[in-house]
Image 1 (spheres, rainbow, N blue to C red):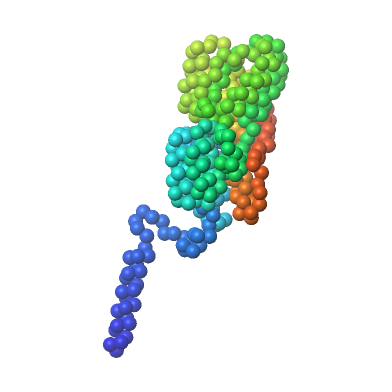
Image 2 (image 1 turned 30 degrees about the horizontal axis):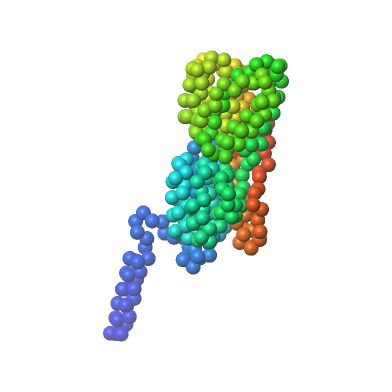
Amino acid sequence: MKKINIITTIFIILIISCMFSCSPAPGYAQPSLTSAETDDLIYVGFVQVGAESDWRIANTKSMKETFTEVKGYKFEMFDAQQNTQKQITALRDFILKDVDYLVLAPNTEAGWDTVLGEAKEAGIPVIIVDRMIKTNDDSLFTAWVGSDFKQQGYDAVTVLERILEKRGIADQEVNIVTLQGNLGSTAQIGRTEGFAEKLSEHPNWNMLDRQSGDFTQERGQEVMDLFLKTYPDIDVVISENDNMAFGAINAIEAAGKTCGPNGDIIIVSFDGVRAAFEAMIEGKIDACVECNPLHGPRVESIIQALERGEKVEKFVFVKESVFYAEDAASLIDSRDY
Ligand code: GYE
């Protein structure tokens, strides 16, 4: 009898102590995997630019949907609010956490050598996604996947040529303004330079002004508002992303003007997100140069190849196209973002 009592007491103590030590502290989710299982996961630290645009939100979603625990990943993302310095700090944090892979969507191109050198020293492969970095040392990253932004700039010129021809004004003087993305980012540099290069082939195209709207709707609207006040005769807006184009539409309408295929001002935008297709259907944007944000599976296939010990391609460019307002209604249902 005494023996049974002792066993029962030990058992109760064990249960009570387990209730305290095994239950998570308030605010923390109970881990769904045991630590042995967590050790098997591939730990991916993703340093994202921010949440400035529909494109970016679709990009984040693609990454989160790809790198799930069910598929064998431990995924952590840092949102740097379009701040390169914050991205550098976040990379250092992930290096300290000893992630298996660093995935970096760089905000701007310059200034990465030191921190990526630290990642290399720690033996952590770096995959760069979307925009590029400027470096003389290609060994600082394993692979890059993203868009050919300069090509997108060229494509915007081809699109504008076609629109002007269709309106029967290809030979007339046209006044253009550009809403640029955040300065120093590859998406801005490529689009601005690509467009500028081909602009010289059109002596009747006047680039009145270029200013950054930071890829956001709010800033796009402010800059467009300023352009409209400064230049009374704007024919074309080149908007280096859709969200700034949405801001531009607001500013144009607030100024009592119209835009789109039947409007006073032509708008050519970059990205081609769903809301831009809606704006094309509403007749407010003339055309979009596509930029595909669905990089999650692309980054995953690089990581999987590295896991298998294979050599990967250093640069992978995504194939993209252009969309005109007249085709938007028939295409919108097939859009994934
Ligand atoms: O065009 C813009 C976003 O880097 C391609 O960043 C990306 C750009 C995209 O904010 O909408």
